[in-house]
Image 1 (cartoon, rainbow, N blue to C red):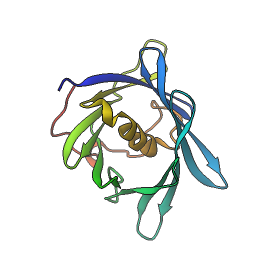
Image 2 (cartoon, rainbow, N blue to C red):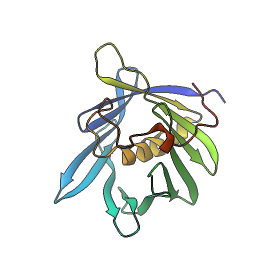
Image 3 (tube, rainbow, N blue to C red):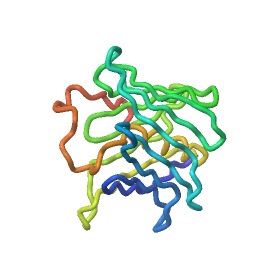
Image 4 (cartoon, rainbow, N blue to C red):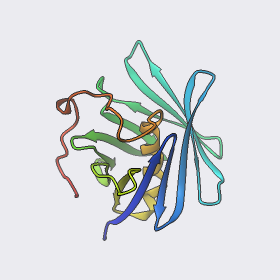
Length: 177
């Protein structure tokens, strides 16, 4: 299986995943009654998912409630206090996201790496470009959904990171690029 590469544009409160110049999926975040949220749309601008971000103060965990267009609800929950590892159970499949050194993020499906986001470079227009390397095109929607969750509230990639030290990020044991 040959990996496929996609480009993502992150500008203000919007992330778009592109196939050439065409937008495949779009994620837009917003504030709604004091809560952060996001909506994900497909190429036809149909709503696929609605995400609500919530910080569970007493457990020191970040939780994302994901509702799909059918009304099913799932959760993406931080698995450590540094908020660098997240886990979700979607359609009886375990997904894990690891935020790593050098502005990379990996997505695992049942402990097998299926995608890597690389945000360590910018394009000539000064608007951020994120590279996505994906093993199977069938996972594109889910991988974009999970990445959109952890990006809620970020207005631009070039801003200061919430985590001050690279030592607090996860080690990328299998870098793809």
